[in-house]
Image (cartoon, rainbow, N blue to C red; front, side):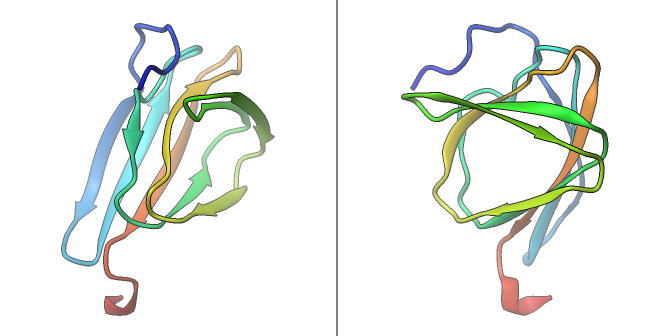
Length: 103
């Protein structure tokens, strides 16, 4: 599935990956993208900086302005490509819940 036409990759840094969770910090230069991917587990995102997330779901692009500290959740099975739509670097922490009851 095609995503955004961008060659700047966002930079993932995994800080924890065990049987219960995977915690990844994503750092985005302006215009950087995650690349097309699908989430195998439900997840939580915590914004570390104000920014604009552009999300390509394979059919349409949505744009959401978020503030540092904002959070959102998504179920397993989400397929998308995420782009930094801001004119400055942004970052967020993504917490994938592999076994929610195990925490």
